[in-house]
Length: 243
Image (cartoon, rainbow, N blue to C red; front, side, top):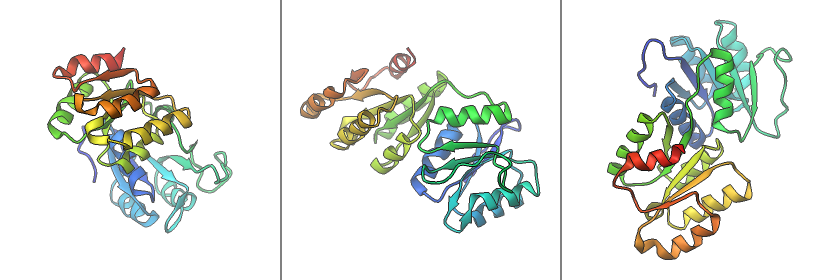
C-alpha cells in the first residue's frame, strides 16, 4: 500500500519476492519520509509503474516471475526512473551499462539501511535521516508513545510485529535495536546472538521488568548499551539513544 505524502516527497517502488524483507524495508523507507509502493513480482511492479510515475525503484535481481534486469529494462524504456539493485551474494554483480537494465547502483545483501539511503541520496539528492531504530515490543500504547518521541527527535523507526520480521530487519543493520524482554522472551537471545555472531554494528537497548530477572542475566552477557525498565518518560529514553 502506498503511503500518503507531500508533493515534494520522492516516490519509491520496492520489489522483492520475500514478504518479510519487503515489509521491513517498506516501513523503513516510509519512516524516512518516502512515499512507498510495493510489489512481490515483476508483473505487479509493471502494473504499478504503468499507472503512476516513480522516481526510484529498489529491486531484487531475482524475482518469482522473472529477472529484475528485465523489469528495469522495461521501465527505463518508458521513463527516466532511477534503479537500485539488491543482490544476493551468489548473484553476479554487474556495473551500469553491462546489461540492458542498466541499474544505477548495486547493493550486496545483507546491507545496512544507511547504505541504501546513501545510494538514494546520490541518485535523487534526498538527505537521509540520522539513525534507524528497530523496536521489538507488543505493548501498542507504549510503542505509539515511543515511536512518536523517536520521530520528534529525527530518528527513523520500524516496529517488528514478529520474530521473523525482527530477523529480517537485522539484514538492514539498524543503528539500534530496542528489545522488550516481556515481548521477545527467549527470542531476544537469538536476536542478540546473531548480532554478535555476524558482528553487526547495532547498539542494544533492553527493556526489562523485575520478573524478567533470569532472562536479563543471560542478556547482560551481550553487554547492552542500555538496560532499563520500561520508561515512563519516553522522551528522556530517546535522548539516550541519540547520545
